[in-house]
Length: 270
Image 1: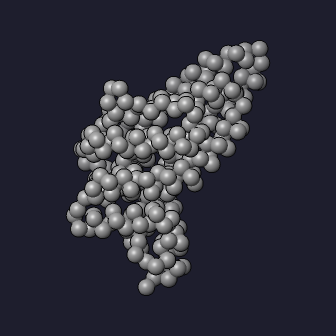
Image 2: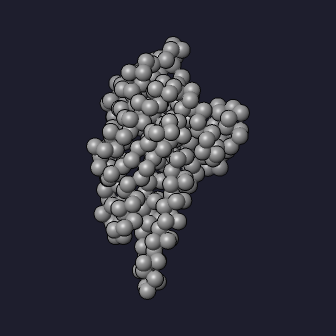
Image 3: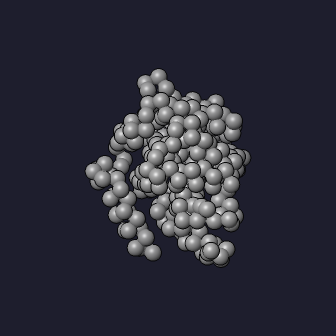
């Protein structure tokens, strides 16, 4: 049986690969490719990364709009160029917190998935992967190896295991810290009230946040996003990644082959 040190080295190596594969803060297409790989490799059982891919791609236009709006609103400080510069810098830093959250979630999700693929049944696996996530991933791997697919209820359980943990350990602390240091009341008010419409949503479906810093509201909206996805079907959720017009044609020509090329190219540059 592999030793704890062996598991530790394997986990660290995977985590290093994941950091590179997740790319920079603005590498949205690359990150979405990694997310989709996890969904596809799992036999379409691990749906959390597929929905996270939508989050990564949707955010591009949201950030563009936010920065343009911030530039317009910054003219309230027209009498002080230094104050205007500082407020725009704060807005850019606040946007980067959101980008970094998606990147960190990608790193965690890739690492835990491929670690448990190899060592999910090791008695010390829970030293590296949170227990609820470990159990959820082991169910995914078991189904994948048998060529079976989880039921909608089982997929929801896997989604919740990841979504709730990320809200607690990554999203919540990062948003709370960023909100405390964002000293532009007008743009903070606007930024914490996004209207989210993923490409797989229907015309009248959206996620309107009254306060994105509220964890209970984020959880409610996240579970709603899962419910919509399950209702429209995972084929549709996957196909509508095209609607953001960010992923390259090579992805849609062969997503698995495209990920392999990204994987080889990115890790070869180390």
